[in-house]
Length: 144
Image 1 (cartoon, rainbow, N blue to C red):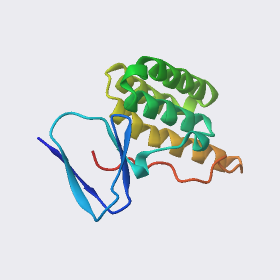
Image 2: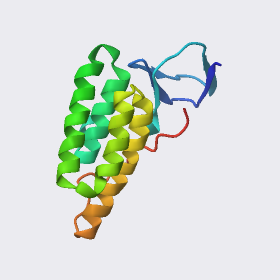
Image 3: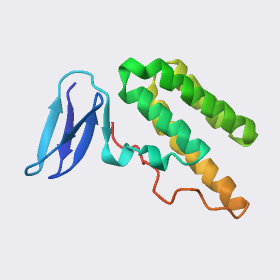
Image 4: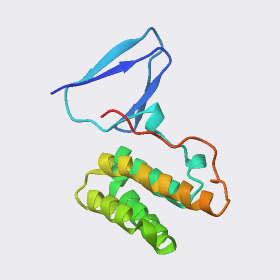
């Protein structure tokens, strides 16, 4: 089944690591084969990967988008995930779910599930009166 993506004017998406920008009027793109797609609201910049949970997200994002570097980035994501779980044992269930998705090569699902880890981190930081290191909104991972 083809994937239809509505792309407003000047909007960008990433398809298999390539940044595609609509330079004209709003349009719809139809992908007829499997492709790794992230919309702008799902993309995190390296600069925004400033907390442990966000580093997990960024490493997974890279694993998802760059097929030739997938094993290396997936391993980075696992390492960051283990570090987070060691520092915050209350995240063990969330981390286990994410790691299972990585093991099953369901990287987009793992990426979306990492939002729960980012939320967990924000709650923990809030409970001790610390603000998250980045005020940028976390990707919301809607729609695929």
